Picture 1: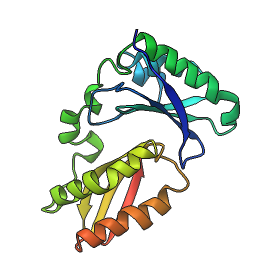
Picture 2 (picture 1 turned 120 degrees about the vertical axis):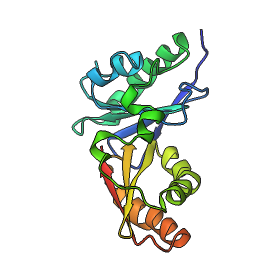
Picture 3 (picture 1 turned 180 degrees about the vertical axis):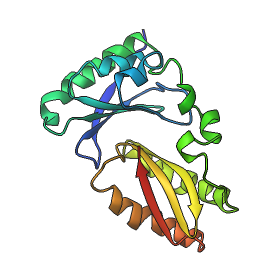
Length: 199
């Protein structure tokens, strides 16, 4: 038994809800995201079971929270309690929410760049941009139930990938331009613009 308290927290994205645990449920510095039950199979039994709910469209798991993306046609008032209790009961019986990180989602695999980014050339500013994102942007993005990953830097443009509640969020463009872009251009004048890809 793993005593667990869980509370639900709204995110800026109206289609996502963050379920926060009072203990560590995933021991990895890099969150993992599942877009389908087949992606979750053999990796996270919790995520796999959550996709049995017809309204669950995505599951994002970090150290101490699970972010659920639901279908737009259903109100959170009708499903939040059911989801919270389901996740809590699972975590009371099972210590970790992820049993195995899928190879393509592992930190090692990401260091080699996903196949779709394989042809992107590295720049001399990549490490500096990654450090700024990790120290100044990542904590705020995670508090909203999401994640941000650096993709590339070319001709003054930083491309990032948004995951979890940030993916498809109506306010993510505002966050990107007024928050992330402002920080990066102030810290690194060579940066002129920040654009995002959602997975």
